Image (cartoon, rainbow over all chains, first blue to last red; front, top):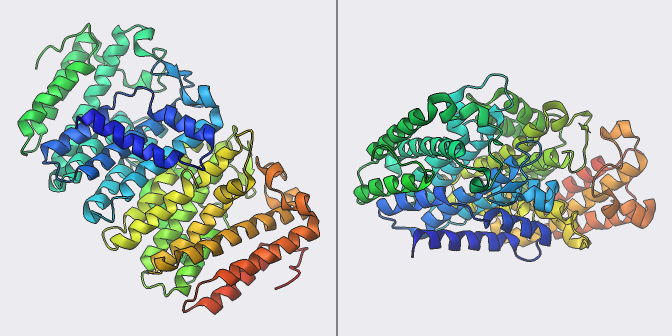
Length: 291
Length: 291
């Protein structure tokens, strides 16, 4: 099965569990809207790609890990879009969850997605306690405090922001979780440090690619109003390094990610896949200056 | 160690993990405020009481279960107090989290507490995979969809509210999780059905007791503005049955809870404990009409 098909099937199964009878109909709709409205699935794809490189000997565990990471990502977007944060009326060219279903259901949608992200992995504990336990720790570390997404987002409320910790927590943590979880699901937890580095560099690379897109893309291409991220002023690689400087930075991050890939059966294919994915992430008007 | 001391210690340990360096200072403060501002700890006490009745042969697991349940309860209160829900400026006589730290940090505090509730149990998977796996399922079921707190809260946004499912999801689910988790932590998962019934009846009993308090208490005694719960109009046992009717209903619920206690080493003591706790939950001006 293609990775993207695996991911959609696994997400459908998790969301079906959550939205089954007797779920309140509007909350169920809001959850489906949050998960199935055109996400690029970058993190779960990365997770499955790493699992494949490590042998993928427990695919249902890799699916659970990928699902958990994507549901956490969706939860963070729903809460980030709330009026008290980015106040975004649209997301991926469609109404944001709070715009479509109201603020109450948007708060609850995020809450439910966090619970069900971890539930998805919990359901694997009986079959594979050691790996599932490690996966749970990986996902909670990437999303809670002091290292995860909630901490990253909360730095924006501080008078002084330590930029490295902020970037790492807000974006890097879930990318690092994606690679570490992929490896862990396939029994390669002993290589977690290497995989964490790959994920961190790729997370930063996607952030720079995003800044490049913001700089060259018109609002309608992005599907969300440009310049509206609450952290926009803090982390823009283009405004900091210029367009060329940002492209060079991106190239270096991708090279470091490729260089950090631990030895495993599918290492070569994975390295090629990373370069391919990053080409896809770049705005069409920019080519990468090196490969 | 006294149950209440065990609970505070376990909560302190969980919150210390979450608020350790490099956590953003205000988020860390908000999380501590949410957890340590005078909660009655009814659910975790119930959890430990049931674990004790079942032998409590794995106290660290019972502590983790009690902690997870209380952190989930705290998370739900923080989000319930948000302007889009109850818009409560105070909670337990102190500023609510959003009043003290702003809406953004209140959203993130709830999110982080949900993550760390489940993390606390996840950390026990390596030592006790079977019981910890069952505990995770118990806690996610009680808090997610379609049966848990998020579903319960979301029913308030529906045009038609099925009252039984609503009450069960919003209040009963976490009480049921408290009793089931206490039993599961102590290896009595085979009695989960009986313990679930005990928890459900007690959850409803506390709700009725709360309505009785609302009816007889002045605003300053409650520590929150009276009549401000978003579900107030939907679930008030006093307005539905009158003061005497509500008291009779409370007595019946407590009797059913006591009657449902499964056979276990500490069953007698537990039954007595339930009656004692319910006396404590009642407003001082009302005595229970039967014991």
